[in-house]
Length: 340
Image (tube, rainbow, N blue to C red):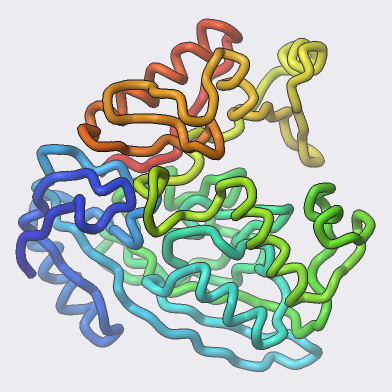
């Protein structure tokens, strides 16, 4: 316990003091840590890698639980199925790399996504046609409303496009473990994205070698500016700042006539490209939005914090961009970064 600066624990490097800081590093310590957090009137805020977090300049009076647990356990289920249990603080990218190295298919296309494994179900993290919710069996989470820890089956997690019951009930849950069911295989899941198929020199719906597919994902993410850089102009960021918005049939038709990409999954509404909408409103890579806040040099959809940026100016930049899209198209953009 002790005071920490949120700016030291978020990838934007923004945020003020957090006087009530609880670092969770060992599974056995959770009961004591939970009791310490529960003594305060405000519900705690759970922080993992801070790669999707917009922390306030003034800091927070809420207890902050920093998830720093690590560890991966496997159990063979038979018939080529393997159960993988991972601690919430374990980096998601390391989990993906571990499963690929072990010849386990199911989350190989999630490589390069920043943040912790425990944060992945909150957003139902996904890429290249895979989502973490597709392979989850259970989530072990502490419910601050009841004061109890529960194992929640995936069917009860309310997964959707970049959402879950954990996201819809902010502050209620602290995820402690994930259990996934993966398949032992030398082949990756079928390729559903054309640019990934092109990179792998394979047709759509084919199943390339597992390791080659995972490596191609990392190469593609690097080429498109989708990896979190360790230094340089773009390193203070939270990745994509807006979700691809849902649009009506009429809006989808109008966007297609303008060359805008729209898509939908079976039984799902149309979604437009948030990046394309922003660029149609005049934004582009490297553009300055507000003082100290610019688009990434690689892509419009990623905002970066530069010298002079504050959490207030970053939030203002998000509101300005979403406002321009709403005025021009009537389409509402939802910001992705989570506010403390």
